[in-house]
Length: 307
Image (cartoon, rainbow, N blue to C red; front, side, top):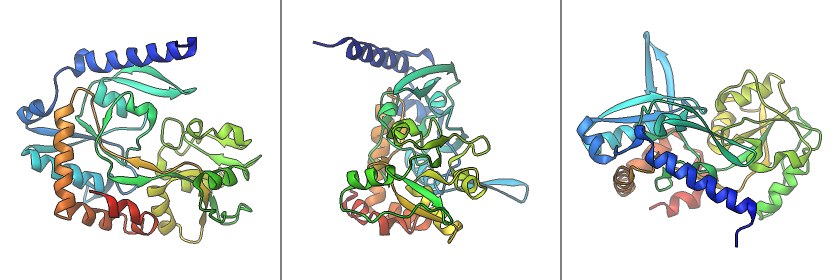
């Protein structure tokens, strides 16, 4: 028999499911509709080496692991590719028609948003609350959240114990009274990792509004340390070599995947089939080596077992 809290959570889940599935904006737009439109609309946030934008000769150049992956998927479907830029706050809205945020371990639906795309792909971490709103493809990239500090910090990297649970506890035990930068509504949301229980002084940045601005923020003395996911950390260690250090893990291992509307099962199935072909022909691993060569050192088993 369900207790009151479980009953409320169940009703909330059913309510969210009905809104996502039966929203007038989101009805019947699956693989067939994408092919009929002749365009695959890729929703993404410029982030790390997944989606890269930079100016060149008065134009904006678009590249990155996920950009090339989605361009290949569009070619596989024999349709044109279109990029739809988003922010972390409106990613869900641009695919489902209604924005949503995660607050106090609950999903809160927000303002309506015009549906502008068919897939979300920008190093999008699979989180429990997101799975209630979108369906994820097969995983394609490993991740986790680490604590990163300036090299002048008295925080010292932990010695791995062989147990990720123990290592997380060790890192968190160091944070009492420490300034830690985090970012709501992202994979760096402190609520996801019970950071309030550490006694850390959690700082939500004013200037840093993107994940790739977290390291510059701590180098600017906005905080002593920051939560940072693996892909961004790998880039930061190269870009700011000698200026930052990894203290240790804050989360268990995580996975990244492509997100689809819950009423686009055939499009999701088509992507999974396409992705498998890129593994067979080796083109996906070439992309990873191009954009994240160091990830094989940290996660050799992930790529060995990826099939």
